Image 1: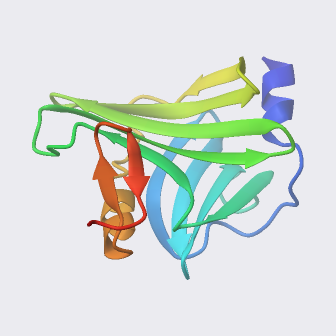
Image 2 (image 1 turned 180 degrees about the vertical axis):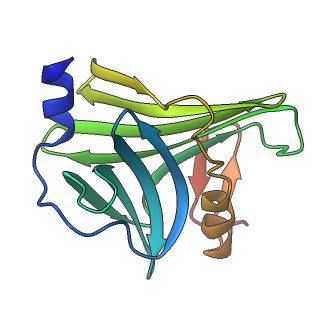
Length: 153
C-alpha cells in the first residue's frame, strides 16, 4: 500500500488546491481527490486538500471520460475520467446505485493495476457535470463506441 501511495505522488509538482469548478471530490483517509474544470482544462489533484502531492491537467476537449448509461435518469450510473503521465494512468470514478454513491482512483501502469483506492464512505460527489461540459463543446456520447465524438452530427 505504501508503494501504491508513492505512485500517486510521482511526476508532478505540488500546486494549490484545484482551480475553478469542482467536478468531483472525495477523501481517501487524510488525502483529497479532486477533479476540477477551469479555462477549458480538467485537473486531477491528489493529496492534502490545500497542498496536493500530484496534479495533472488535460484539455477538456480531449480528456478521456466515460459515462453509463446514456440515459442519465437511470437508477444506476457511473462516470470516469482518466489522466496519463509517465506511463501511469489515473482513473477517477464515481458511481450511484439507488441512494449509495461511491468512488475512487485506480492507478495503472500500462494494463497492470498498481493501486485501487476507494473514497471514504459518503464523501464521493457526482461527476455528471463533466458530461455537460463536453456536450457544451459540441461533443456527443456514443454508447456503441463508449466514447465522445468530436461533433454531434
